[in-house]
Image 1 (cartoon, rainbow, N blue to C red):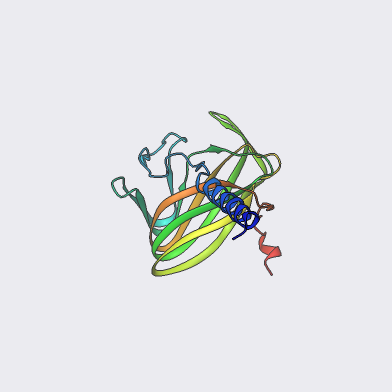
Image 2: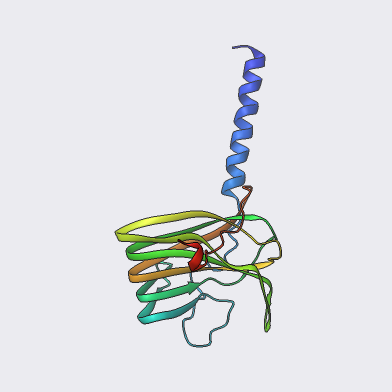
Length: 191
């Protein structure tokens, strides 16, 4: 093997390993991805995971030992704690879901979100994952969404409808992709 070919192979290996390590080292922006500080009592602090029953009957069962939340019922929201984002940047969102029911993911974007000082970005709510029906199976959702140009904070909302689905391993990491916000179509635009 020539020295030149050996150098090319070594440099290529270093570049590939470096790129892989950089992706693996991406910081999860979601605070408390293991649900250890979650509290589903009424009027909880907005810096923790929050459960919202939308269509009764609904319930949320937190298993801190397994680092998961089981959402059951007609329609249930699970909101992450708020985290910082960079305006106009793209983010990779991952959530593991297992069970039977429909699962979707939304992002809620804010210009400011600190105490009582709250301002909505435009668009405020995006849907990087439309509803997907699970039939007693496990699926890891891995989607991209773009932050609005005025967003500085965000949280993810996992929605479970018509079933019982266990949610775990939520993460949001910066992406180098160029992605526009996935705006939710208005009913008249869905035709």
